[in-house]
Image (cartoon, rainbow, N blue to C red; front, side):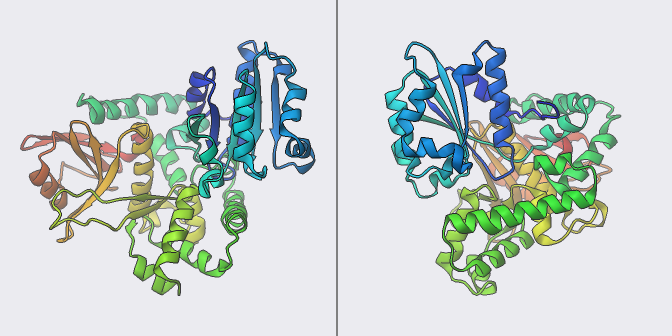
Length: 432
């Protein structure tokens, strides 16, 4: 298992591994699901589980999977003959198994001594055929391309420790109001260099491993053509592939923007319902993330239109045909905004809802964290500051909702200030 990058999700899987529920690990192609399962397998062996009690089946290998497809119960019994022993079955790329949900339900109910760990794309749930069989029997986990924290850890362990300390301090401020100390930051330039690489090329594992720009570009092209251009199209039996690709390109151009379904439909020569369906497909297959608006004043605030973000900026940049270095990019603020959203979701462990805020008068705050103690506005201003500065939009939000704390995400600036009863923290994006 040399040159394997550890993933944050591994800790969760290890924590719950002794429970009976089926693990379903979902995520896009080439995000590292197979590698994560192999690492989990090795973890079990290190804990004393005999290798003969662990079965790993590649379901996308027709010859290997054919006996399972022919008789799944007989297949499992052949590898797990003793009811008195604990077994672990890893079923990788399980979406290739026909009638997979019903088979898993039968196996779960028939073999209480077996833990099933299943991976696959979100196609496992797109039609509901799998999910409906597994209610009360499954724990779902999502594996995305590398977060920036995971990226730093893969690149430089020394910098990773510094990143974790700063990241935790910001998390404490958002979650508990504990104010992070403002220290001399002698490593910021080194971490910023990695952040700029991550913004341009993203976090797919093979892209991270590539040691030159041309190889990175070629891998991203392959991911696009295989995953978006082929897998999703074939899975959903799309007939109008050209329209689908056009919509994906339009969305790449509007990354971090508020969507107009009518405008996209017009520009792609599609129609409203088709655009909505394509968007739901891209969200379900972990290509896009949609963010809904925050509203309490129903007469003055935007209520329906989502913002859309590509989950991986490298994939987005391939589709947008723009791998220019960050200093020469007009869209660097939008790229940073997408990474900040992913970081907030990771920071909050998916337990706290995040929205964006925009009024009909066009005052806008990028993110609103809906904490139990009230909304926390987070504004992304990916630029250098010389002194604390608060935009009119953020001031408007603070006047309207009087939050206890707020965050302004900068390129490289630490500071804090008070605005009325609101404590505002300025933090570099690379630490969030």
